[in-house]
Every structure is written in C-alpha cells, then in structure tokens.
Length: 485
Image (cartoon, rainbow, N blue to C red):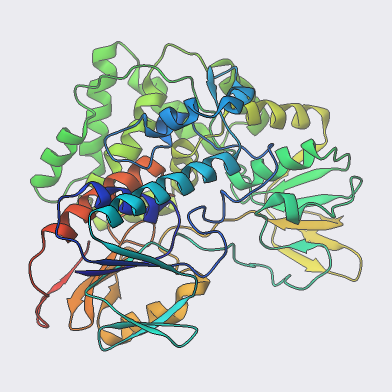
C-alpha cells in the first residue's frame, strides 16, 4: 500500500499516530507539505508566549481514545506550569509549545512505522495535480500512490477587501512574533474579525506594550464564549451512542437532536428553556456584558454549556451527515457564529485581557462595516460612519468547505478527473477511481461539520480512516460509486 498524505498539520499528525498503532502489512507513506511549518500548521509555529492554545490539555490530544496523551507530554515540560490559567486550574500553554508536542508526536509515529517496516518520507513541495495514479508536485516530480488523504486544513485568510500590498495591511497574522514586530505602539489598529484569531492578536499586541486603540470589526458582534473549568460529565442521553442510534434510523431532524439535550438537562434538574434562551440571545446581548458574566460563570456548577460544547464535538460529526439539508443550511447560516463560538471558546486568561481592554476603552467592537479602503498612509473603514486606522490585520479564518488557495489547482484536477465533486450542502465528496482512492480528513470533507475541527475530533476521524486504509484489500474498481468519506 502506497499512501500519500497531503498536508502536515494536526490532521496528518493524528493520522500518522493512528497508522503507527494499526496492525497492517508495511507499505510506503509520503507526506507532502509546501511550507516550513511541518507538523505545526499555521497556528502552532514558533511565536510569542502570549499566544496561547484555546483549550485545556484534555481537549488537545492528537491520539484517539487517549485524552491524556498531550497532558502526559506536558508533565515532562517543567515550564508548562508557568502558564497556569487560574480560572481553569490547568496550564494553557503557548501555541508554540503545542507545536513542539505535534512535532514530537509525528517523529515518534514515524520512528515506530519505520521500525515496523514502513518507508516514510516527507516531501517539502506542493502537490498540484494527479496523473495516471501519481501525484505531481510543483517541482515537477511525480509520486505513485494507491491511496491519498487530503489533510489541507482551511488555509490562509482571504483578502475580502482587496488590501493586499497596501502599507500597513497584514493578511497573514501567524506567526504574530513576525507580523506584529513593526506595528507602532501608538498605531490605530483595526482587526478584521472577532473570533479566536482576533483574541490572539489583541493579547499579543497587549504583551508588546501596545498603547493605541484596537478595533475588532465583526459582522455579528459575537465574541467567543469563555471556556469553563472542566467538570466530570457522565451523560445518559447526550452520547455518541445515542447519535449513532438516531443516524441509523435514516434522516435526522434537528429537533430530534435537541430532544436529547432537553432530556439530559431535565435529568440533571436544569432548566432547558432558560438555557436555550441564553444560547439564542448570543447575538443580541451586549458583548462586554456577556463576557463579564461568563467570566463569573467559569466555575459554575450548571453543566448545560459544557454538555452542549461536548455534544458539538463528539455527536456533531455523527449527526451532521444525517441531518436534513434544510437543517444543515439553517445551522450553517443562521447559527454559524453561535455554534462556532461555543465549540471554540476562549480561555479565561485571554477573556480577562479582552474585558480589561474593553472596559478601558482601548479595545472597541464595531459591526456593520461595509468597506475598507487603503490610502497612502491610512485606511478608511465605512459603515454607519467613516473612521480611520493605521494598521489593518486580517483575522478572518476561511470557513470549512472552502478550498485553500494553495490547493486550488489540485482540487480542480480532482474535479476534472471525476475523483471528487462538491456536495450540495458544502464540502468535498471523494470517489474511488483509476487514479487512486481519495479521502478527505478535516474541514474540507463534506461529512465534517462547518466549524473548525478540534484535535480530538480530528484524532477520532483519523483513527477511523486509518482502520479503513489498513483493512482494505486490492485497488478500487473504476466503476465504484461516488462516496463521502
């Protein structure tokens, strides 16, 4: 078996770990990564310590069914306790340290695979197309493959306002140690977006001693939820098994899924209607007031939000492909920001920094921006009024299902060859064809949810895919039907 893995970020690390632990006859594995950030991805490069991961250790493991894998690695890093988050009672380490963990996990997996007889290599080049069962790279080299896994992530931010090349515009913020190095401490900074990347930028600017105003530009005005201190959860209704039972019955309605949460909260003695009202009010409550209240609820004994966040991560991937098209469209459009903010909350450490800056007036949150234009020395933001900034930083990550710019030619080749097609509700469907078996792991897959996939979710998908790859026999037949994997 000759396996090609395109992309060397979190998804690829999880897949290598799963393949290394699978019982299979050895073959060859070739990993392709065009950037220098091998194993780290764009978010976990060497960076300033102020840029932290956005979850406690138990939610950052790349090994399926082993939530303590990252935690155990951290115990061997004495400096990790310097980054204890008092609100969570656990270390929330710099993203660069998590990148070290990813590198360690990848190297360990490769060493094990090689001991078991696999030939593993890493090619630092971009895959641009397919030809007669071979992957073609930008450098003109071809590599024969039997199975290919796309682990390309979401790619870089997109320049929505055509500002590339304008002095003072930063399109790619990571690593922030590089992108923010030349920002004048007195500069008026505008950050496009109000999600976790925007929070990272704000924290890094603050650590750099920035004194000028910082404005977060957001269509929705929604900030990420604040991560709560982990508590033991033992759901009886809101479980992957229950999700599998629902999905086994055919098409699932969103109301059916909500009924599981309603039953869970009822059994715990928590008020479902009050909880549902709080979630529905996400986009209407004043962001600073909401942030302040959520900081007081970090150690709350109520489990509703913890359960919902858990369900999005563990049950969402199971139920998503079975939901009606109407429900999937509704969730992707009407409730995108709420679900994304729930599934990717910010840690209390960063929430406290942001609230302090909002209270002081140094940070403002603006909605309704319709245009940003660049002049010779400044930018003009236009909405209900017009105002100016000296620096504009793009913090809008591409949503799931969007083809990363660096893989556009490859995806076009897949579509032209019939090896893939886009699903009506978003994402890429792959098929078995004479050019090899194609699989998608992560945000580009049609059966993945529309939110950023978290490391444990990717690890679970990687384990299922590794099991499928190592138990296959023979090559696919040309007439095999189109399937989503």
